[in-house]
Amino acid sequence: AQKVTQAQTEISVVEKEDVTLDCVYETRDTTYYLFWYKQPPSGELVFLIRRNSFDEQNEISGRYSWNFQKSTSSFNFTITASQVVDSAVYFCALRSNDYKLSFGAGTTVTVRA
Amino acid sequence: GAVVSQHPSRVICKSGTSVKIECRSLDFQATTMFWYRQFPKQSLMLMATSNEGSKATYEQGVEKDKFLINHASLTLSTLTVTSAHPEDSSFYICSAKTLYSNQPQHFGDGTRLSIL
Image (cartoon, rainbow over all chains, first blue to last red; front, side, top):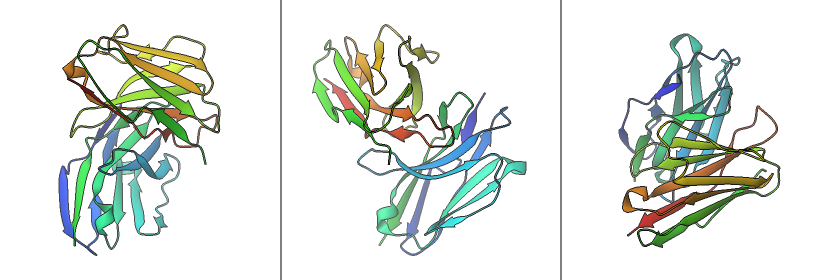
């Protein structure tokens, strides 16, 4: 069974602070994909990043970066120099071999000016 | 890039009404589409997998007679909430899978359903 855990329910920061969102997953698949999505108040899901299970290289894309640690089954996501527009609910998701997505409970990020 | 269109974006109707939601892949063929439901302040839960030309497969606990899914073409899947009641009020969102396994699923913008 697939399981994604986002232990942080809410995070509140002041603009320009960094925000790190935690994600821990469980799967029996040897091949899988991990995702981070952003859901602003309007409701749509915005794709942010994807990582496959074979690639543990951590990267930076603009103000976003991620830390994939297969040994601890973690896929953490960091927003650097946060902005008010980053305020949203962030979901970590795991895609199994049948392409179904299992979502974490979500972390609500509030960035205050 | 790949785009998924979902319609309508918002529905408000009386209890007992049946509501149809459309999910279209605009510039690619989607043999498989997925329907998710999200209650307020909760996560997204997969309801069913829609396969073109065959019956949908439903997740445990989802009533197939309540949530009718039709995937008649490679670009369109529909979800019909039959005889909707207030407890069916939720945010419904679809996604479509491309032919390429390394691509993320593309989501529609969702439908906010409110049953009075």
